[in-house]
Image 1: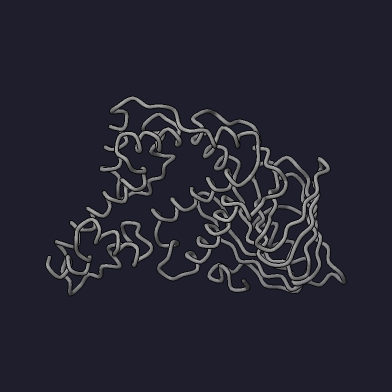
Image 2: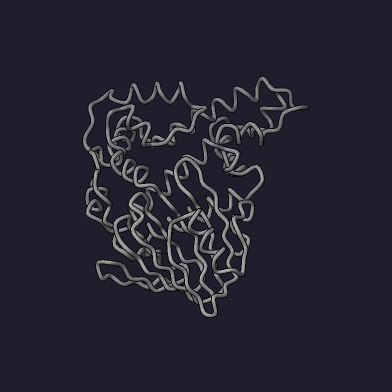
Length: 324
């Protein structure tokens, strides 16, 4: 994990004070202590419009005391070693490598003790981002702190998907030509990470999120479908599409299944495949690569893209390009 997010180095240091300052700048104000005031800290992190993702290790037993952030949630996914944590309300949790993590709430003081071999992927998600995302999922306002349980189980289906999606996001940001250069795909994946966090954690909204979407009237998808056609080259998320249709995300999914027999993103993928084909037909194969066209339309996995393209059009994209 040492090389995770290596394209985004913040600091590598043996100075406790430098380590404290770097984590404060990137994440939150805190007190940091370690035996003999020595660490071998590595912090890599990058911030986008939605949230900050980073990799952190200290290579020393350390204790962090963090006052309420007020404005952000911090999601600590332990990928090596372990931590022990406690917070103002008396809750205590232990995180273990790839099995559990913790969520630091904006209104709690938290103390976290790291083992020397602990490594974490850490998300800093602004309250506005996560609470607006939840509001769009439920189609009703969310004004209060989402009261996540302290611990986060990464062995449940939702927890495993959360960890896998965060790790995939980190790998893609590290990869030249990856998500860092694809705003459509990056925004979709960041929205997916927030959705998985809301489903993996336990809070007062969990049951509402698990409920099926409301029944919809026939034809209600008209504005959504038109928006998709007009903005297929933009980063579209289920949340934005739900806003266009004046419905919750759950209702959006129910409407697509009811009216079209597919998911919103599945329908958007078909539109984008059509756009890829149109572009390949008019391009010069001597100067254009299929990969470049596919990436421009948000298709990250080339083998999967080629399979989807062939299923839709009966030929490989390279054949379309050579015949265009």
